[in-house]
Image: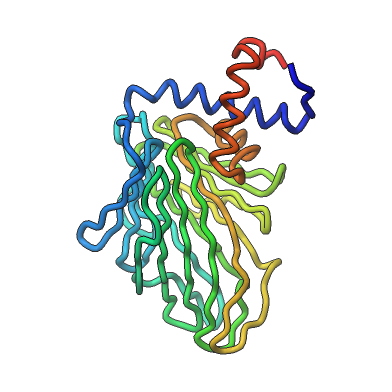
Length: 278
């Protein structure tokens, strides 16, 4: 076997764990490339790992999260306000309706979407979302456009997740290492958010809970008509629990090709029993 650092071993273990999860749900997933479909102005993104819906009505954002292999149970409940951005400047300003949406790229197991969300105040949020087949996570790159002079991130929920119970009772947790992330989980799977640039929190304001990422530490003052630097964060969903969401942090920022290559390498190098014992 080849020499292997501790970091490579951790990544290999995480990739191998995910590879086995993929095998478990493979019979439930259809063999097709990632697709995007516009229905009633909402956007449905489907990969072999999940189906998610971007709601264009206020408040815009994700309104449905269904991981593959859980009998099509939505982790988000009814009532809207499931996942959106919100900031407190001159009063709270939430995402309104989606001002613009377009498919930037589609093919070869990858989808790139562009969304523009107005908050009715001084900010337009430009979201570039990238989704892949083969992995349970996706990436958001967010840029703030200043409609008027404003601070990019301040006293905000960037983003906020309100699952509203969904398919079952929710448990929440958050972690600081290897970088900030949080998750909720129930019997039907988990949903998680990850950031290398901010912090993560959970809340008990409602019985079914909330969680958010905070990026006040990267705030800048923007003049009217200027744009912020991109902010990158990640989200994930799969069958499993809070520990699975936490373990995924080891690989969630990796390009899928790298993760899948390590997974294949691990399967050639060792058995699952050997890997569990490391």
